[in-house]
Length: 332
Image (spheres, rainbow, N blue to C red):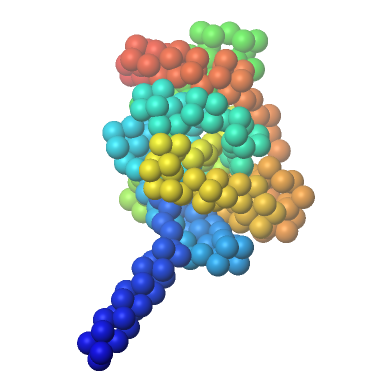
């Protein structure tokens, strides 16, 4: 009788442990480099929201790297539940090559599944010793540029298109002059890091270069951390960068995390999350949070990826082997 009672208690104890484990969930967010700080805080906010709503504990794991590299990792088997990348092109690649994301992923959430935006700016050292104000200034001889590599980095591709947009707008859509400008800019590139955060480290911690060309949100973060050492220069023409998000259909089905993954991405559109995005230098879609998040955004002439025919067209034209970037960079 005593042995039977002990067995019953042990069974109940194991059942309680199983029940407790079943009440917890894990989600893997595979993201690009500069989102580290934002998602560290966002994940805590979402976990608290989910716990209050469902009573379930959730752990969100993060993976960060270049957007192109992260896309390839998911294609090759990294079991992301959600991807939050720099380019729609990188999510399209997952959908096309691994079939693990539905082809219509961009239509499943508002704003083409892009809950926040950014732009491309210049970060210079305090006092702006090289007198950099616009794209032609960083094309001048003697200016050392740090920027990521367009072959691997999403930010770098936005950089190229922003510079090209300036070249077109200031030269009556003269393609030759736009190419020449991009070529002159990249002739000054002293380092082409694999990812945007690596370029930030090169510029700030290693002290290399006169100007960092990168995400607006990344520049804002640096200036907030080191206000006496750096300043932001906003070019007269830039581009509206729209980093997209998606759940990975095949993986959420496998992990039984579909409802959780959808809720995780839908929460990005809430006022609470939009304020956090704004706090960390991303332009919120919900403009009503502006003025309450501690970050202000300068106005400039922003072109969009639609002006280049969308990402598939732009990627082939500019960044495929032998494309415009290879043509102007090889001229170096």
